Amino acid sequence: MRLACCSFALLLASCGAASGSSLGASEPGSRPGPPPRPLALGVTQASFAEDDPIEDGAHVHGWQIELDPARRVRIHVRSGAIDPMIEVRGPNGQHLHNDDAFPSSTLDALVDFVPSEAGTYEVRTTTAGPGQVGAYTITVEAREPTGVGAPLALGQASTLSLGDGAQPGLPGSWLHFEGQAGSIVRLRVTSQAFDTIATLIGPGGQTWVNDDANDVADGRERALDSTVVAALPQSGVYQLVVTSYGRGQGAFAVRSELRPPVVIGEDGGRPDGLAGPRGGGRLLGLYAGITDYESQSDLYGCADDARLLAEGLRASHVQDERDQLVLPDSLATREGFLGGLAQIASQARPEDVVLIFYSGHGQQTPDADTGAARELDGLDETLVLHDGSLTDDEVVRAIDAIGAGTVILAIDACHSGGFADDFVTRPGRMGLFSSDEDVLSDTAEPHHAGGYLSWHLRRGVLGEADSRPRDGVLSAGELTDYMVDGYVEDHRLINPEHELDRAQRLVVRRGAVGWDHLLWVYPRNADLSLPELPALSLESAPPG
Image (cartoon, rainbow, N blue to C red; front, side):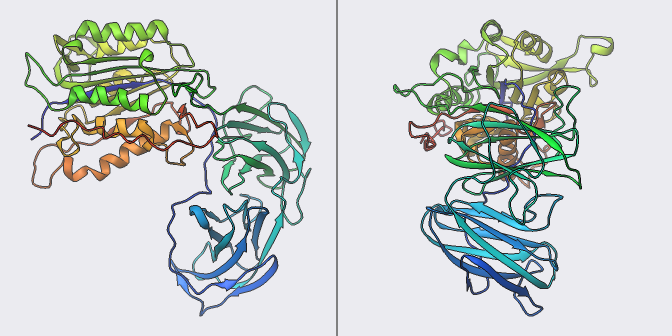
């Protein structure tokens, strides 16, 4: 049965300008393949032939090599006949793959990493195109687990020429620095002489690449310059490789910023400086939910949606009670909700993150506005609170007073998509809505939750959304992707095949908030390891 259970959430953070991706780590689990051949240090000659095994249309060879974490390893596959690819799997789920080591510069495949532990590593070579045959070489080099090329001092500016710190047989300039797990590093590479590409290689073989960041800071920089932002997943030596898109040469500059790791306090409480891309911010939140109504039909689990979201954020050490206002049932009044937004507005700073959540009924009402301010469909959407309703216009006006850099509004409510156009009108605003404006929203009894958006949101912020990669940093893209994936998995629960109701779907509006926009970091243990996800059920009592 489809009920009018609604949830509303608002999340605020400031936006990072960098563009980057983590291309190294991948899902564990080996694939069957050809019998492995022995591989050793040095150069190994091989060739793909027509009668070699084929997977996904491409020939493939399997290899085995014994490696030890005392030595950093570089495995380089090159050929004049084929476009090679490499994949490496080792103990502890270490999994690396690479097609083109340095885009635009070479088709060679390369992985450079410290083995996770001593043991046997599986190496697979294949080709980027189907059916390619021809000779190739595999070069395996081992060295001390220190970087190569020029040292890079984080926090200081450096000027070099392309080719400084060059490595035999490899393009570009090589630099290195020592990084701590949990740190966030921003590397800005600029040049007036050539189109830069920046590649950052982690000690575990993780790779972040950026070509054109389009984050021009002043007239001396260009959209063609590169920026990499990386949350360092482990301590060790990181290598920055600067190459040119095309055949350009000349001088380039590197600027860097370092955000140190955030560590759980000795008392187990929330540390300072975990929110926003620059750090120093707090996570502030208002969480309202109504299960028991006096003037409307009662709902299932909506007050728990608010309580459990707040509980999950406390358990993950990103928020404590002093930064939370929880309004269940009779406390979720018009005055309480608007007063809570006003309280946040009086406290929030540009570096803070604000999360506001509502779960309850949602409805539509005729729009009293005229002219350009009138809704296209002539209807305002409302949140039905304990003693009356708030229109989308009233909610957005209250949010407008909050002076934080980015606002994420998530409404798990009937007709919730109608808030999107009213809300996403400024930079730094992102919306998550449980259904389109002309569609009702289901309650989520199968999950023992008030709404499907509420269920996935509270699990996501608990730490499950931090998965691309799992590095202790929650980005806007990770959160929205997690929500979308959850709705896809639950599609048949929300929209059974026998139902003729309008189908419910998640509506996402990220506006000007980029995928890599950093919301907050999850504090680490004293040894800089990531804590296990809190073991919370996050479920309401079963219906009835």
